[in-house]
Image (cartoon, rainbow, N blue to C red; front, side, top):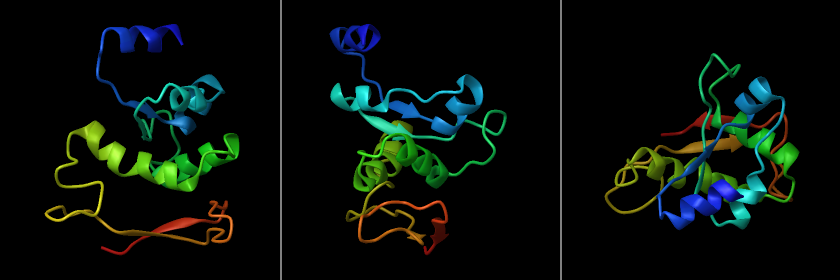
Length: 129
């Protein structure tokens, strides 16, 4: 919290990119994502790299977040995975959301619990466009 307060005090623009599967591999724990949320920090989801992750799947990262933070809504994680990720990479003028002039890809998350809007272990992504 002290580090976050210092970033805010210095008005340093930052997006906190969380890579929970890499954190589990390296440190055997996950960052306090809810702390970032309480501090109203911009969050994006990443995968780190294959040296600290078994695959480069944003959906797998979202599943891990869901398992450890059950109160974080799928809608919130989708925003982190799309628009916030594009903003963190500086490509949000073309990608990350459906807006006139943008060219986002379209993915379908299959085999999820549509009643509770939760991911399942068997959920997977199918690229549509």
